[in-house]
Amino acid sequence: MPKPPRISDRRTLNETGIFHIEEIDLEFANGQRRTYQRVVGSDEGAVLVVPMLDADTLLLIREYAAGVNRYELAFPKGHIEPGEDPLSAGNRELREETGYAARQLELLSSVSVAPGYIYHSTHIVLARELYPQPLPGDEPEPIEVVEWRLAAFDELLAQEDFTEARSQLALYLARDRLQRDR
Image (tube, rainbow, N blue to C red; front, side):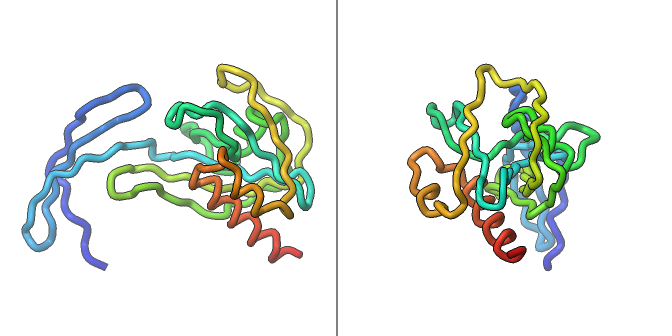
């Protein structure tokens, strides 16, 4: 594997409170120099939770997604707070967004989205043995919780409002993990 380029300088181009956009000057091992721009997330990243109400029932949420200006069906997700690990953050987000906590949490994968220009990781967590334990969240309106049978996997993928790539990947990962347990 080649040695990563050396960062000779970095500058903040814009800070919005949500997005931090920076420019970095790079020097590659072969002497080539380039300036790249990237969106910088937190070192902690985010968590996305696949909650299993029972052996064949997923919990999803439907909430407003500003990026596409519509309500989207997806799995619960959110930022990992400083000092939290992905599993505890996953349980917190699960409680805030569905009203359930999990006795069993398992990290399925950690993924990036557009790593060429976004510094961000999402940790995908499978949550089982759910029990009611709501926690107030920070959403501007109540979140709709939707039960979905895992056996209706293809129908979920065909839903017009189930388009988020991380949720689709998480669905595949969870299905494969659950099949190995059977």
